[in-house]
Image 1 (cartoon, rainbow, N blue to C red):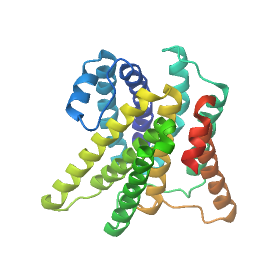
Image 2 (cartoon, one colour; image 1 turned 90 degrees about the horizontal axis):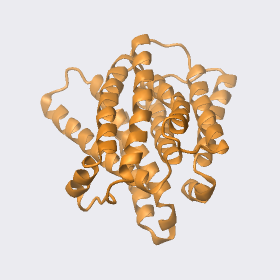
Image 3 (cartoon, rainbow, N blue to C red; image 1 turned 90 degrees about the vertical axis):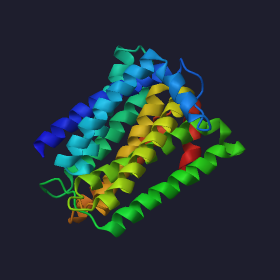
Length: 288
């Protein structure tokens, strides 16, 4: 499990750097359109910044899969969430992007909340890759319905001004859906090829949709608020999936449960604080 945690740290750094590269590349490409996915992909690939970011993201994805195969998903995602602080550092120091004080606080609050969540769980070992079919189908179905609801909200004229926040939330949920599926695949030994093939195909399809949604969100929003919100939504959903689907244990002590509830509240609060002051109203609309 220690190797898995180390890989998760590497994946966090690579993912944040890749996202910043892609953010810069997205602003040098034509608007992403899901109605013309091939043209959008070609336009994005034509940007050297985005191509470099995509290459780094592919490496980070492979490292992430390796981490999930060795450590519980809740631990891996908490490590990735804790790496959100490096996002602000890299954005400001390397790319010169301004980071508001409230955004620094939001990233620290969200990372601390997810770290607290993991610190309060009972000690356990192993990768925790076992699951019940009904549990993973129900959880993944719930994420899919939530993403569909946000898509309908994104198409609403009333929420048109908040499209970047909605797209970031959609991308985060889709990344979580794919991440839980990948974790399930690492523990699906002995399952027939006839079952695995559609599962893998669905995971790849969801991952591709998540990439398109993330690119569209990056084009419309700032680096910190967009990347931070995608990461918080994806990590929080996968930590919940670790508990509900893969049996990562919660605290059995009343104080521990209270601290875990506080940790979830910290994560939710940080998601509302990440958007800049100009788009804070958008975050409140998503929360509603």
